[in-house]
Every structure is written in structure tokens, then in C-alpha cells.
Image (cartoon, rainbow, N blue to C red):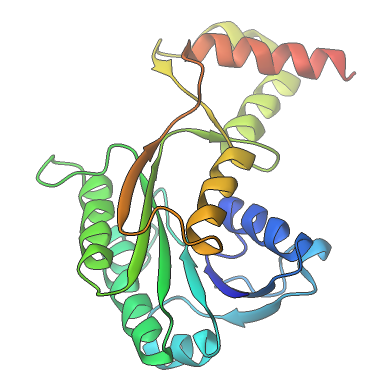
Length: 229
């Protein structure tokens, strides 16, 4: 199959692309950072786009069986606002997918995305979900919580902390129960929706199997880093 991935140079997009390429699928990576992806993704077609132009996207999506919409931001910088990226960008992705004859879309959302909650991030993610749900496309929406794996923000930030200021490993964290989700598990669910056609017209919440405190997650990362010295 041929799958387009928005946010293709990001954490989830890269891992999904690697999985699909490894299984012989054709991948089109859509990213603002074309040329910055790992060597393992060189076999993909790469298209530069900030999701603002449906014409560019519709050309990129041509011949694709499905689109994985993984593009997103965690904080606003200049013109890259939640509304522009999550809401307007999703509208352009859906418009382009319909134009190109794509039949299926998978959307990466966030576990706590919901309307009228006072959080611009959560509200924009919910708005993106609604756009996809009402698109007429066969969809799978994945609402994931904290995701971990090689190249993620959580492990990168914690490992940097432990290597530079070890004493911060035990202070500065507000205790909170989390269920970290392995990136491989997330990619498997996205693949089930995109390639296998499972979870049609479903919105699913996805978390890891184990609940632990944030401090425990930090401690485990520290132990792994110590063992690798």
C-alpha cells in the first residue's frame, strides 16, 4: 500500500514510516523539515509542506491508499499556532485527501482533547477530531497519552537532566500518575487502522498497560542510563 504521513519528520511519524517501509509499503513523508529525516527513511518520497496549501497536499496524496495525519505542535511559536496547525491544517489535509481520492485517514490526537475546557491545545485537538469525524472518509482517531521511545521528548529531556544535573532527578517533579505508552504499540494500532482496515470510524483512547508515578518513570530512566555507562 501507499501511505502519506504528515509530520513525517516528527517522533511518531518517523517511527510509523520506518515500520511501513520495513514491511514493503510505499511512504510519502510530508514535513516542514524535508531533508532532516533519518537515513532509514531515504526510501520514502519526501514533500515539503506546512499544511497550509491543499494543492501541494493533494498532489502529494495522489495514488495514496491512506493518510496518517501525525503533524502537530506542543507549543505555539510565531505563526505556528494551535489553530493554524491543528485546526486549519487538518481541514487542508482532509480537503486534499478527498481531492486525491484517498479513502482512509488516521489522526493522531491527544488523550485529554475535549471541547470548552479552557486549554487552547486540547480544544484545537478536539476540533481536529471533529473535522476528521465529519469528513466522509473512513477514519481512525487515536487519542494517546504520554508516548515514549527512542527519540521522544520525555526520555531525551530526562536523560539530559541526569547526565548534566543528576540531583534534579529527585526534585522538581510534581507527582502525577501516568501510563506511558510504548511507541511500538502506538504504531501497531495506527498500522491496524491504515493498512488492515481495522477500527473503522472509531475514536480510541490508548495508554500503556502500567500505571506509575512520574518520579518512578524518572527513576527507571536513570537506572537504564546508569547501566549503560
